[in-house]
Length: 178
Image (cartoon, rainbow, N blue to C red):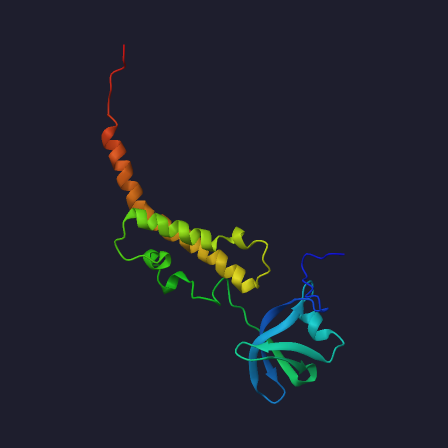
């Protein structure tokens, strides 16, 4: 039977997700990377399983199998919502021009074009059927929110000026037509 959450490569391999961890080994060294966890299983299930090895891939290294008895401590590394691929906090400074990739003082037409281009590229629905790591999904969602906020910040002055024009055209008082 076909399972949507698993992909069979045709060679009997089923895809797995990874959990970002920092492992302290019995020799005192620490390594950081991702432990392979099959869909529908938790990290505790993998560590408490009877298999003597776990599949581990260092962030900047090769994939390998570690003996469970060589692991003395496991600490989860939580990247936060969308912060592992790029720094996304507002404390870093919110620059709507930089988010949309525009120079300062860009005209409204360029702002709108850049917004539409970025909104299409980062819209979460575009990647709904793709099997992506959680960090990538979080990054896409975070970028989508930031693109919308950047456009709203740059559109506000243009919208105010359009409203002022409409207010000037609309008469304050008019007599009813007879």
